[in-house]
Image (cartoon, rainbow, N blue to C red; front, side, top):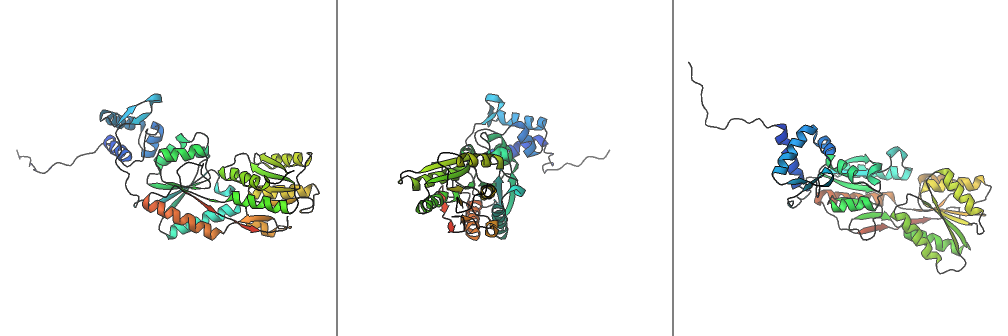
Length: 362
């Protein structure tokens, strides 16, 4: 019988799927992809593309190694301290995260987004657009954990956000740039239009024109930039006596905004001027006032805090505030590239002061 040959070199090993899953989990913990707690089992299984049975076997190994432990609500808490997060020079993907589908964005935001993606592509970066209203909710942690677990190695540009979401990115040390305003005191980089300065200027202009009864239309789901708008307007009105300000907080629908405007016009101090946040709502206000037979600006003046290309075609041309899209894109693109290349940005707020476009509605 012929003897079986023997070899001095190690035999090839078959690596099980459980072992590969353990390795992927260790890497995620080591690089800081997850901190505090691991995502829920369902989200982890989906992100790693393995079955729940395989995932649980891998998690048992991590528990045996004292890397994680089961805590409240069966969440697995990470026990061992993480090594220093590596430099992000290998990160070439920029995630663009927003709550509103692309097709529902107003024209100016569409142009900005398209120009920004072109700029990032020319610089050698990929950009992925993600739409997730749940990430912008009052309790975004679960949705954010699922999203980040599915897209490791990504830095994020967040279009409009609220405090719970901002705090989650801080606590989890995920590199991001807030496109919009960040809650005061939170150490995140942000870039936004200076709505406070714009509305302060608008208020002073209306006072010089003799207006004493004013209105400000803001959406109920307002972001910090909208709060700045009210603050800036009140700053301009405070020194003057006999001023009445109606703040119309609407739900974004035409019907609600028009009802609030009708109620203000029927009040004891009907507004003779109105400043409107968001260009699309300025269209609604202008059309409704004309439908009521009011002459603009003879009976009531209208100022839009934001710009839209269609304003140039309206009659009368709407008075508004505008920023340079090329300058805005350049600033965002430069910050995004720095974030992708280094993983950090100074936690400061950058404000772009918009230009006043006189129009014909004041």
